Amino acid sequence: SHGREIIVEGDISFTTKQIFYDIDGSVRARNNLRSGDILTIAHDGNVTGGDPYLFGTIYRIDRVSE
Image 1 (cartoon, one colour):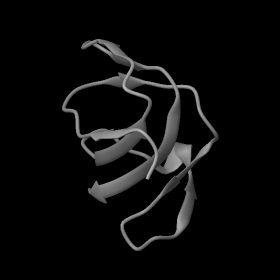
Image 2 (spheres, rainbow, N blue to C red):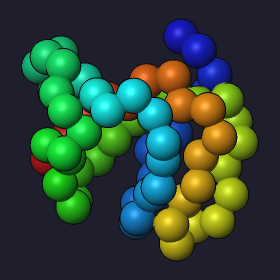
Image 3 (cartoon, rainbow, N blue to C red):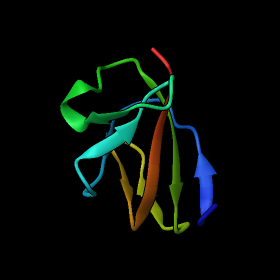
């Protein structure tokens, strides 16, 4: 897999393709993400802030829990 994976708590801000991979592996639109979802984000290691987290390049987003 590309980059590093991180699980964060709190608000995040990212610009990427408007899709993510759901728990069952299906592709979903980003507007299906909800507050409180737990995500695994494969990225390039550039993360700043914390409220919200600001990511550099994101390669993949997976929802691991709702």
